[in-house]
Image (cartoon, rainbow, N blue to C red; front, side):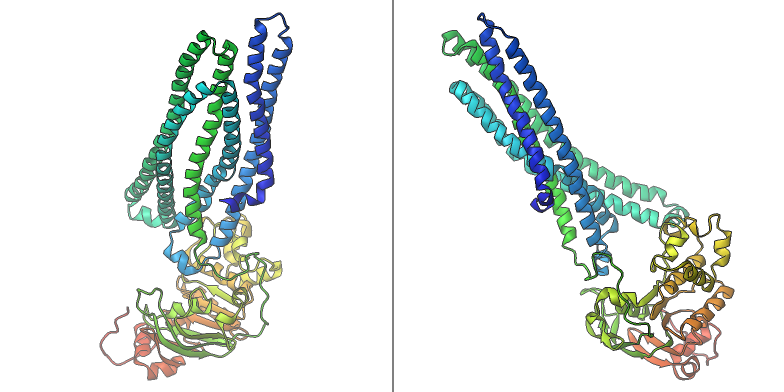
Amino acid sequence: MYRYFRPHRGAIALAGLLTLLGSVSGLLQPLAAKALVDRLGGDGSIAGMLFLLTALVLLGSALQSVGAYVLERTAESVVLAARRTLVGRLLRLRLTEVERAQPGDLMSRITSDTTLLKAVTTQAVVSAFTGGLTFVATVVLMGVMDPVLLGVTLGVIVLVGVAMGLVMPKISQATERSQEAVGVMSTALERAFGAYRTVKASGAEARETALLDEAAREAWRNGVKSAKWQAMTWSSIGLAVQVSFLAVLGIGGARVASGAIPVSTLVAFLLFLFYLFDPIGRLVEAAQQYQVGAAAIARITRAELLETEDTDAAGEPAKRSGTAPATVAFEDVSFRYGDDLPYVHHGVTFDVPEPGMTAFVGPSGAGKTTVFGLIERFYEVDGGRVLVDGRDVREWPLAELRAAIGYVEQDAPVLAGTLRENLLFAAPDATEEELRDAVARARLESLVAGLPEGLETPVGHRGSKLSGGERQRVAIARALLRKPRLLLLDEATSQLDAVNELALRDVVAEVSRDVTVLVVAHRLSTVTMADRIVVMDAGLVRAVGTHEELVAGDPLYAELAATQFLATTPAETPLELR
């Protein structure tokens, strides 16, 4: 907890000092009231005492107000710093960590959990400090006035304090479970909105609503539990006030009647008694806030323990390693996505000289897309080496490696925002001329011309206002704007019509004269003119060659080509595509 408020300890100390001074002015009020009562029986003027009492009340209120403002402002600063740190870390997580976690739960740690830090790192600290000092000072003054009445008061407080000590851990447990349920709800919402059309087309609104409802109910149940325990602590304080008041009033009245103490002492003691429960309330509130904040800090800390990549946290653009086309080589690479999962690659070996186009084909599940993930270092190999420019990718600075690569993913994701923002996403410093050139090469002119605001038109959540083919062309233009030395295209034309596919195939062929291009494709029409084709099956490279060579020399490729009417092959057992 300390590391969150350490940068703001000066402001927190100031807020604590102001609050403490306000408490001191409050402590002086019962003494002024005692002096006022004593003067009521004499001939002295009470105007001065009334003025002093009024000044103490106003001063205490002013100091408390300024202290509260400083504290709230500092609390917001703590939350801001925590969110910035957590966002910067989560966006640098290894892909394996993100795939294991639930995105909605990670988002709730940034939004919901960090909000709970506000109380525990500022109010709880100041409340515990000022409340503790004020409590001690009040008890000392009460002891000076009458030790007997103080003993009665402390006896009641101790009994109530023991009961509250048993309740506090339950608040923390209920709060953490409630926050976990909020994370589940965020995950369910993210899932539903991420496949909104599928949800509607499947008539699954009621089922998804039921999932969200159950998560909301779980958060409600645990929130109610936390509220119940917190209510018990406050009701205990109220009970202690009433019992102490009655005990002090009864015993104090008897002591006044016996002449042991004057009536002004009883009045002042009763005022101190009521004032005593303000610092007690602060201490209880600090304990509650600590229990709530501890649950949030535990969840945030678990997120911070997730493994991150060694990219530049400052977000500075990485320097490109030259302009020449890159070479790629796999040397006996083995890989699996988890220790409990089967291997996807079983000793994959191939070489890609520069420049030119190299295509990867084969049945689904052969490990083609995994090749791209290993080149980008989204995953680390279990055995063997992946080389770019003859250098193991693990030896490259990660940002520099990725700066040399343009990557078009299989589902061609488009981010919420304008079309311009999406095109410039990988190359924010591109000029208008470069942007126009990329738009033209990706055959996006008609799309831009037809949009109401042109490049400034919002494309919707995940590009919902664009067709699948338009999203693919946007992704291709985005990759071209990056001016990569190595271009990775994963099913980049799978959703294009024949005319656009042919046009973009020509663009890729043109790019491959100066850039090393790797293409994954199930539609062989996209890659028949590739300089080399790597045929993969069951995590192994079974053949490398041109289209004509493979049709003649590799039965698997010949079967794939015949299935797509790109070659003829003797009748044989149909190939089962996994």
